[in-house]
Every structure is written in structure tokens, then in C-alpha cells.
Length: 114
Image (cartoon, rainbow, N blue to C red; front, top):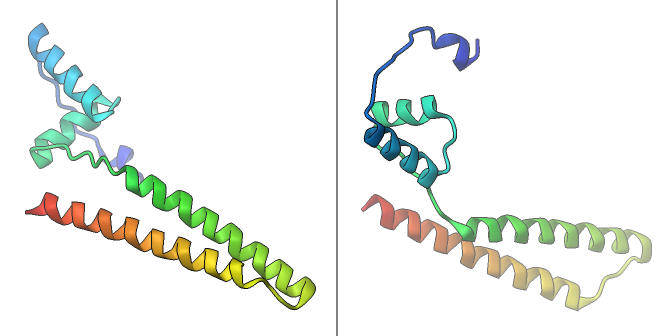
């Protein structure tokens, strides 16, 4: 059963225009468009957590690039039986860059907890 089907109890409340403006502003700040989800998160968790981690986007991009490079090298290795040492160096450099990005993300997440 989906979560939506499990949610059978309806809550309703009234707000002043000022309160509605605050709710709408907070929803916009967190990038949440579903008012029920926002209010449920606030009521159940007492907060909404939005992680702004542009490094994560960089890490995902880099992982895609690395995967593409590995696939190209594998193809060339199968076709020619050899690859250039610079190709391995490039992958090693990108792996180190990825490690640095992921380490930065973990450090930022650790700072949020404390």
C-alpha cells in the first residue's frame, strides 16, 4: 500500500493572511510545493531540513565522467590490447578529486550535526 493510501485522517486548520504568508514564504525558501508535505514535516519533525550541497552535484558529474572514461578505456583495451598511461593518470586524478569533494561533503554534514 502506498503512503498516500495509508493517510486516511484529514487535518484542517485556519490561518490568518499573515500566517499564510509566513507558511508560503517558508515553503518557497525550502523549495517545497506540496503544502501538506511541508506542514506534516513541520508537525512531525519540528523542522524542515534542506541540504544545500552543490559539491554533491559536482561529485555526481565527476562520477559520470569517470564511468565514461573507464568505459572508453575498456573499449580501447579490448580493441587494441593496450591503453595510454595518461588515461590511467587522468582517472587517478579524477578519483582524487572525487575523494576530496566527498570528504568536503562529509565534513559539512558533520558540522551540521554538532
